[in-house]
Length: 511
Ligand SMILES: NC(=O)c1ccc[n+]([C@@H]2O[C@H](COP(=O)([O-])OP(=O)(O)OC[C@H]3O[C@@H](n4cnc5c(N)ncnc54)[C@H](O)[C@@H]3O)[C@@H](O)[C@H]2O)c1
Image: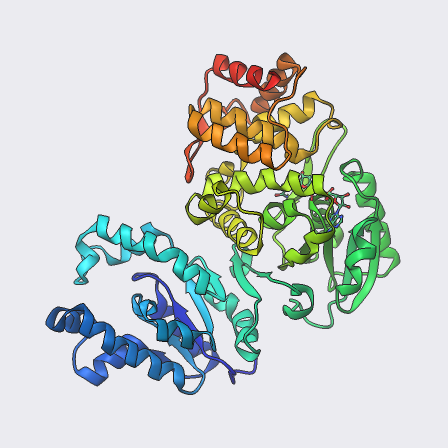
């Protein structure tokens, strides 16, 4: 790693995020200096920021802070940690444009745990702490070139090569999120031209075998750099099978792929799941890079490491957890996606907005068209849920909002009548009925309707849907797997639900 930076790596985030510690760790790993605005203020004025604030008031402190921060940002590129409030200065925000901003996007609870009871003014007032946190979180996220949802030392160390590649380059539009996984996790690059401008993981000696489908291969495989081989599968859910996986394994052997090589999954959720599974199992596991090209894949399926194929008996019945080595998301690839596939993806966007709440829900409920910020926020929400529960033991079940009944509808209609997202549209409405969130249900129905998604399915066989729901329940060893949503951002899993209520919710869908 060449530690000479073109631009500073500037750690930002709320108080208690762990910015100073993380910045010092990165500087130590790179063997370069570390600047800290709080330390500089103390050196220049002989008192800590907290003492200055108490003695001279906020206005005076902000002036002193702005001067110190601008001095650091104007100096030699280095690693810098900024005080949590310094981004209130327009001059600071402007100067940050030249540098790489790295947000430590820790949760409210983590930050509060570190701050409560401290000498800081907000350390004794949880309500005021929370108000300020909510006010600033999206300001930080918008400014962040890189967003790490933890200050965990293993993750910071794993992220250093990605951060360094940003600090070596020019300012651009590419953004970095971080996924949880073994060895500290993986980079998720989001932005126009991500395939060409993001650093590909893995050393050059690891050859790159692209798996794609018959619609996507011609469109985009030429954009993947240095391909050693291209393996094309037929497009469609009906080809997400063991037979197709076998064909991919055969092709990898024929093209002399080895354990040192890696797979690139270029396509929608079908390619991502199938190629990920082939990578997880080929010679007991080779890395996979996910390059999602559908909305479903860009907001959901490319992250989190669930891979697999369908069996004739049931969907996704054979598979493995296999976290990607990296994910490259270029929203511009959606330009060629057929309208019905875009709408199907929108159902997952609405689901994710209900789980995440906040800015994402505000944008979706305003009827905004899907853009890069919405895709990025969906990815961030999914990555955060997965990070809290990589193997689906608890909180990850939140991602199944609308899916228990949605899957049952898919099964009851023989997987042929509806796209997955269309079934989820119906499932979301049923789950909001079960959640007794009628006003929210009405709002969600008009959003789904406007996107061209079904909100009723006349003739739906209610008994068949209920039977399929029960089967799903049995698969989960008796647990009632309903996920309920009482308000955007308020999602609960494993909720016991009265069977009559489930019936009423499904009957309502049947019209
Ligand atoms: N692993 C997970 O966590 C997870 C999560 C959600 C869904 N899934 C899985 O994802 C699958 C559904 O994914 P999907 O909706 O992306 O379906 P898909 O992969 O079948 O893609 C839909 C269609 O769009 C075409 N296509 C893809 N990208 C295109 C582009 N940019 N331009 C033009 N055409 C394009 C494909 O060839 C296909 O015909 C299901 O199998 C589901 O089980 C997995």
